[in-house]
Image 1 (tube, rainbow, N blue to C red):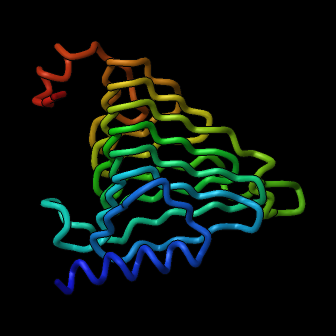
Image 2: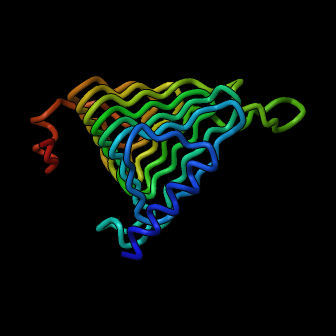
Length: 196
């Protein structure tokens, strides 16, 4: 009962901060949400965000962080997608496809957060942002990092701890630092991953 009340309150707080909902969403714990002026953060129907320590067998060592960082930025999580203690920060555009799952502590960012100039660090987020798109029914493993400009295809798997700097085709597996692309379902089965 208390857990359900918390989810309702956190959804209301997110709505008051500017989050748009396409249907019901479930919050297990309180996410950190911020929506920049004139930007959009949209959660599709049946999105689930796990931010509480006990909400994931691996634990959530931080809440989900969902942020748009600049005007016209867009962060979209499709229907039936979910994240556990993950960070999604959009300076331009991050799109998560329907049914995609994002593991504990993963980071998805579309910018460098600052620019190094001869005068020092500057805060111009959009100057170096490039869109990130993750297809339908993909799986992003725990502690993986998806960097700016990356497209991940439908049903692709990103292994735990991978650092992804280039596109991952549909039905393929990316693992390592930097991530390398491996075969599809057979490689995933060999790595002990269940794609069903």
